[in-house]
Length: 411
Ligand SMILES: *[C@@H]1O[C@H](CO)[C@@H](O)[C@H](O)[C@H]1NC(C)=O
Ligand SMILES: *[C@@H]1O[C@H](CO)[C@@H](O)[C@H](O)[C@H]1NC(C)=O
Ligand SMILES: *[C@@H]1O[C@H](CO)[C@@H](O)[C@H](O)[C@H]1NC(C)=O
Image (cartoon, rainbow, N blue to C red; front, side):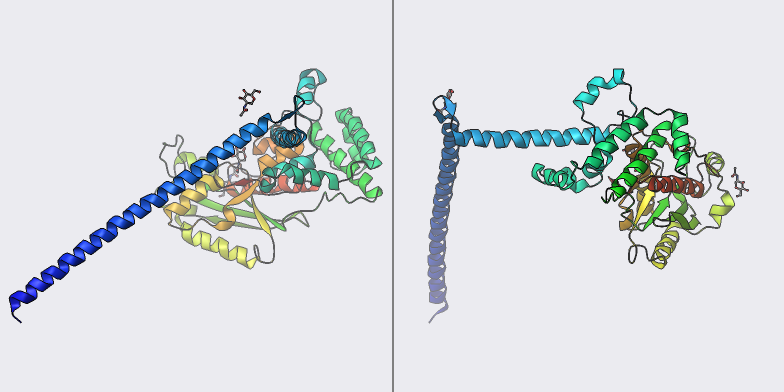
């Protein structure tokens, strides 16, 4: 066999192969197109028939009225809609604080009518538990039904509440003193305290469990960071944490069990501004000799582990400043190239809890204290002192029967 014949045969072979593969490709493309067209026609038909059916369905009438089936369907839809409206209304009512317990009848007669007032428990249900927000109307109804509000004790509680609403500040103080209760604070807070006391004792007498004092967490870690700052922070200013305080509150004993206070050495702006040192009373020497943030966070984690927080005990972080987790810790973790600690991803926003529990407008730390008849102790804007004062408010809330729950998260 010569070389030329071999080449000729190979050439013929490859030509045949090419022809074959070409025809194969063409056939498969045609088949594919056919399948696509058939599928498209089928879906179109299905869609068309569905919309037609629904149209006809709508028009099925019996003696000029929609058929029973349609009426039933419509009423179910209507009920669902009304239930969802009711839930959003409830959430709005719980969120908006203007409705105070002792509101003037002239000012709010209409608003009271429009927005049904909700008991704190209901508000808690809607708000504190984010999963409840999307609850189906059926489920929320079930929850309400399990509580038997027909019991006569609820009637007497509500009339007691009416009486408390009409009390003067002096009457409130003397009544609270009579029961050995704390009588310091603004009238709204005293009213709330007295109502809760009456409610608990009435429910107790009626043999119903009020569950008022149960706490969701064993421990609260109150945190209030201090960070580097200027008198006028430029828009792109990067705050670095310079103080990391934790006040550990036991929710059973309601006592501060321990405190941790660590200074941090800033790296981007190692020299504290005069404004910062005078605001926080943290000195240059204190941060100069401090550890850097990664070491501090490791110490904090070790401390938490040592306290068995997150293992044996359930705990939650409590903050008041709007920037603690969302700004300071987030920026600092980015700067230090650390993973954001998972336990800091949600927390108890104490000002939110305070205003929804006592039905006051949202107020700053010092005003919350004054509302409760307390004074700020220590140096304001100093992390550890702020945290201690926040802890005092948390303790007062628990004493007044508020279950502190997570109500804010990283955005
Ligand atoms: C349904 O009834 C309305 C009037 O009530 C009419 O305009 C419409 O054409 C009807 N639709 C069908 C699909 O019969
Ligand atoms: C608490 O909630 C209020 C209102 O939503 C918000 O302005 C504030 O920044 C929050 N604070 C914290 C610490 O999350
Ligand atoms: C500032 O801190 C120093 C000690 O670091 C302390 O002696 C002083 O009392 C503090 N100032 C205030 C107003 O608390």
